Image 1 (cartoon, rainbow, N blue to C red):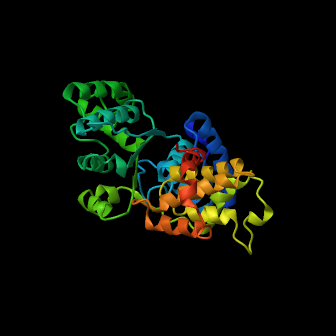
Image 2: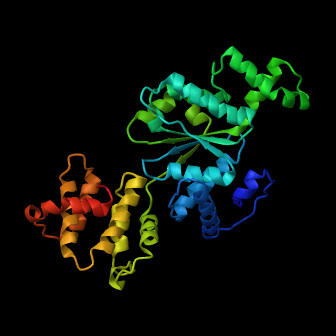
Image 3: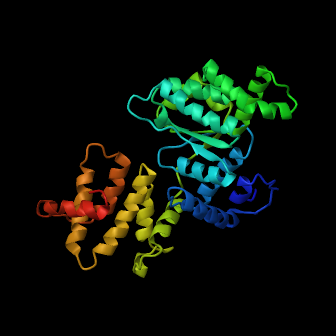
Amino acid sequence: MFYPSQGDAKQKVDRPYVDVTDFPNVKPIFEEILGLYNKENKHMNLVFFEDALEHLTRIHRILRLAQGNALLVGVGGSGKQSLSRLAAFTSGCGVFEITLTRGYDDQAFREDLKQLYLRIGVRNEQVMFLFTDTHVADEGFLEVVNNMLTSGMVPALYADDEKEVVINGVRDEVRAAGFGETKEACWRYYVERCKNNLHVVLAMSPVGDVLRTRCRNFPGLVNNTVIDWFTPWPKQALLSVANAFLTELELPADNRLTQSKAGINDHLGTVTGCRVGSEQNACHIRGHHNLYNHSHGDRTLVNVILVAIADGLRGPKRSPTVTHCLKQGIGTFHIQVSVLLPGKGQARQVFGVG
């Protein structure tokens, strides 16, 4: 195990391994780093239960290696992207990610990659290239990524005049390193630097046969990466998330989670496990939080929320797992749908989606 110091990483200081013995000792370190991350980037609200820390330290270690690339396999909402961003911040890597737009094609993809290679090749920055299955607007993108993993360079990325500019940008460093000043020597130096500074992190879903087919067609996705499987979070991890969000609420003692009786935390943990995305998960827990804050003495408002949940159960796109969990949650209530339907607008406002 090692000490993940963000400051040392940015200053390129040698960092010896330090044994921190177990995850409880790692947790406050990453909590401090998360605070630093949130000051400089879009806010992330993460709960560091043991499984999350295991994945986080694993990704961090991969990014600290030269030519360290990762294939993260897990369903959507399992935290692959959030943990990757924090691991990159911890290791001193920048983050590069494409933004899909209407008509985004292979040429637009290559133009974006030129900006990436400018950072890792000319500016000599360590950069994590985060590429998810939602970024695969064209299967040809994966052929490009496969080449990046196997050779470190995208074939025919630069036109002749652009390649000349790149070579001139590193010529002085090549001369100082004693490799000569030929174009071939400069280009080899540039490609080798790109390979060492580039860290490709693929976040893919294992659902269906798509990933299996892609790995068969593009073997670099498997042969040149460290594979990290994100299995379903255990119940204790989900309860940790629920506890973290409900800590500041003044809940009745008999509604808290106890060893002998499941309470609100247990309910939230169970339903949280059925959510299909991290943002949905956060909205769901915020909805419970807002409902509790706004419903004191107002049983009608609680009933309105139950009607909204009942409407969701009848939705054609509701997954069977979510339907089962929600039915368990409201099965004991008798809802007068015909009377309370006009209040659905208020329910949507409480949940923050209207």
